[in-house]
Amino acid sequence: MSSLDSITPAEPARQDQAIAVPTGAGSASLSTEVSFRRARSAAKRQTLRDVGLRVASVIALVSIWWLLSLFFPPSLVPKPWDTFAEVGVIVTSGNFFTEMGATLRRVLVGFGLAMIVSIPLGIFMGTLRSLESFFEPPVILGLTMPGLIWAVLAIMFFGLNETSAYAAVAVTIAPMLAISIWQGTKSIDKDLIDMSKVFHASAWSKVVDVILPQLISHILAAIRYGLGLAWKVVVVVEMFGFSNGVGYQVVRGFNVFSMKAVLAWTITFLVVMIVIEFGLIGWLERSVTRWRPRVEAWRR
Amino acid sequence: MAYVRVDRAVKFFPREDGSEMLVLDGVSFDAKEHGITCLLGPSGCGKSTLLNAIAGLEKLDQGEIEFRVPGSTLHPTSHIPDLPARSPKLGYVFQDPRLLNWKRVEDNLVFAFKGMKIPRESWQGRLEKYLSLVGLLSFRKQYPLYLSGGMRQRVGLARGLAIEPEILLMDEPFSKLDQLTARQLRQDTVDICARLGQTTMLVTHDVEEAAYMGDRVVIFSSRPAHILEVVDNPLEATERDLDDLAFIRFKKRLLQTVLKLVDQEGV
Image (cartoon, chains in turn orange, brown):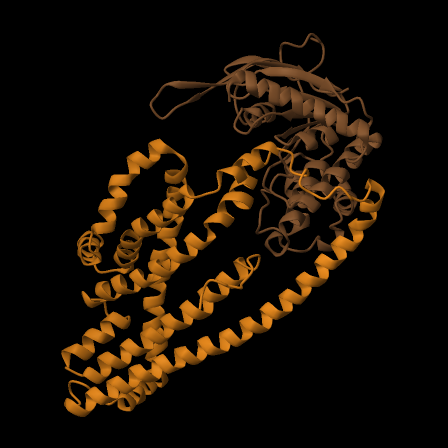
């Protein structure tokens, strides 16, 4: 029962221990400092290796493409470098930025609308049982609804204009975002909520200091999936008869049966996606999770 | 000045099958003003539930918790009608540190300052005072996950103290630490509490901890909990020495009470 009973009887008296305080704190600081430095250099090596592996993966994909192009006519599988040259033409021709800009705008506006609705919805569903029961059926239904059908419905309802693109994107991804945040809210640490109650934290402080930081990884995951889904829907919408956007350009390539154009537009699109994914979202993730030690001992 | 009286506290917990389990069976005692009152009892007996009720995290099914602090009273049972209602200022040190890991050490304290409406001018002074009291001033800009378990627990302690509570509640705050760290922190806490003079209630299942820290020891039975005995420590805080005979005698007396009572309860 008494945790100190097992210790040897030759204990130093209380006065001796008092001296031990600063020493203890000092040595702790030194050893943590050393372990930080070691962790940092190990992390650097790992990052280098990870980048190398990613480059290797891209080279492997292009090689497979090149191998395939040896067996098929260029109208079906064009040579990789011919396609890359076409990408260069598209980018330098000037209409790349307006087309990509139009698509990006549709994605971002739709995405923003979905976020505005689903973050509070997800938090409420995770915290209030009655709202969970009420909103669960529509959210699950919405999740199973194909984006193509939302695109058709939006265009029939709003006509061929920007509103229908925004609406189709927002409605398609909102349920997915809401589910992610709803589940995240349910996994929030109740002990920390109790702690914030004990110290009389305001409702605002509870949300901003206690709840949202615990949701941040769920929100980031939701942003990743949401953006991926948004791209897919927006291209479908654009194919239905819009006169600009990447989807429209792909359809134009299809109409003249130019595999090169279809692939080239797809590639530009993928590159922009990757820049957003690794650059923007990666940066966002790093800057909001600085408090978490980055050593992942359990991974190889 | 800051006194706490627990009066016939009764608490039921719902079971899975819908029936109710009696956790607190009419618990009454007075906390020692300006001293440390240890609530000693076997694990799972309801001590922590009572502490949560005092903190306002749980509601009692029957009974009262009465506070009297300078300025006013919380509960209608007290008999000073003229004073406006005011909650006592409560600090809480949890069994695990319960820090906001995404905030730096000092911002964890500031979080409590903001909640307790402590004027901004005094933040800096309090941060320095209480972080150096627990020996962590040089770690004020660090994130908690980069600290050791003992250091994190000390941040939790600093947070509980820094709001300068009238009543400090501690729920087995050292039970998850290694012996040496726990020992050091017990001693530091006794010294700090003696210096600050707030009324402190500490839940523990460790007899030696109770004997060492408690100016008063309230012994709980196993569930459903009632009070078996309330013992005042014959030794002043400064006289308590783990190897001293008088201390060992007091510890033994507590242990015997606990064992005898546990025996009677048939556990």
